[in-house]
Length: 231
Image (tube, rainbow, N blue to C red; front, side):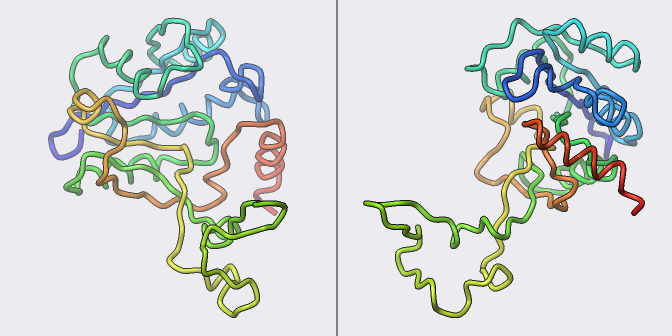
């Protein structure tokens, strides 16, 4: 609990995935990807209950090995939204004050990030907090589109030769959700059936912690970093 508010943490770990077969339990540096999240969640001083929602037998086995509660999900369709997946879990559990979705595709997040986003939700006047990371080369002012074979900027006043377009000069700083952590009040997700609101508060994470495993290349990068983090 935090300030007398109960905290439920959920990881949605379906069996199907397109980029990597059974991505959520694919081996990374000698253990299933999901286990990196489980290990950090267990260190939290605020989480009262942690469950993994899955439709996959092998994922259940990983959870059982790590003494994690499992909630059975119906076979997950690609059209199901994440909010719908969370509500499917919440409908099988008692009410908690806060709901924290902890994605298992970010193996570098730590308990510090998990507890920090819970504290941020507790201190805020909003109903939701989400993790973000700063973007540099992909800043909106540098993003292009092609029109009639010509490369153009979304900023109609862009002059590619004028000063101030270096990555370190771009302003204001731009951020993107890194798909790691979502924190919300129970009432927010149940009433609005959405994880985020128009008053969502950001929790900033560094680039390394924001590595998201979607494709085989992501696995190679993550494994290289893990094996060489002391160097």
